[in-house]
Length: 125
Image (cartoon, rainbow, N blue to C red; front, side, top):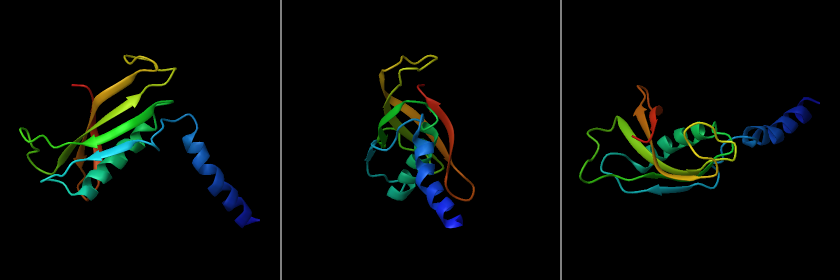
């Protein structure tokens, strides 16, 4: 009986998290070589952005990228800036237009004391 409940929960839980949330499953990752971050560090930061993105109801993440600017490289490895393109949903409120594609939306993350990343800033700016 207990195993049956756990099995049902394991099958239904992913569906509960995907319903009515931002869609990130098919987003394309673009990762340029970096002199500052390893590929794993960049992917780890992207995961944080994707976890936050699911809070935007009915939005679809199209791309998430890390591109190092040779003219303005990061000063250190404590912060990272990622960029996304996404489509808003039909019920979008606020300053963004419903059913519109937005590009170069930035996400700034700061390295946590014991590893991992923390989202500190996002948006156009």
